[in-house]
Image (cartoon, rainbow, N blue to C red):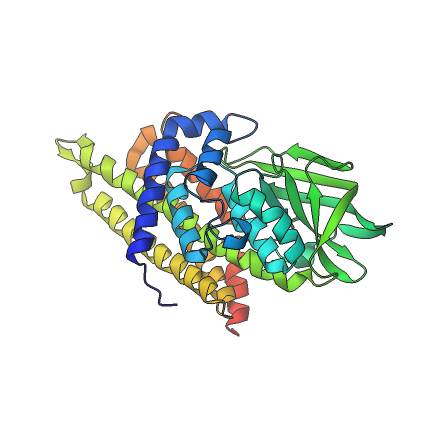
Length: 371
């Protein structure tokens, strides 16, 4: 694919931005982040039925729009810009990609229409804590139980794991790494909300004690499919980080123009000018990295793994720096609960750790490049 955003892409961006600004102002973000659910079901249904965002990357035969990673990147960039409180990343970037990569046509036909219609919230559980983000850390076990499977182990952190209607769980059977679907109300599944750093994104710990699971995909061959799904999710998360970093830049520049000290706007001071100029360069570089990864995902080539790691590492650092500098430029008010700056800082920090921190991705990128 040509790495160029088309007029149709910009039209999609305009629609999603208008929706996000109307349905996710700061007041709505603060209201939803204080609830146990963490999102507004009415907004969720509107995202599905009026905008088709939940089916953005789902094939048309399953009720989706049939678009790809570039369109998803645009949507997530706009959602990240306003800190939209919704289980969108978990459902679309994680669970949907894992289902699509699994190659299990029967399960796809059963589950994907519910996602596209906004009837299901889903997530992917692979991480088991201890600072590991790769699949080598999966120790959850799967054993046959008559005609089904029983799962034993724990997963943490699981994005929106506390509200998901069903979860795709990575577990090891004798044949190797497998993927299983576990219902949210399955016996033997216990869900515990984790104390969040980022109040706008809910995390949970899942304990599986003989929980029944349905095999998704080929027995013992889930590794490559999950790797591809996680690479696609990392590229999508990078785009979301770009949206947040862009908003931090906008807030910082606006305040620098209006805040007057010593009879002049602080934006006229050289130190503030340098901060804003450096942020602009970092945010634009992050956007380039994120969309390079999205176009690599769309092409389906082998370049995605390196591109996703490069984007996730750079965008994580750029977002955290933009959020930190936004607070510094705002001065004392930037440290208060009433100002939104801290919400972006917390989202930036938590997002940098999800799906592997910058150190993990730089190491992986170095391995991919043979360094």
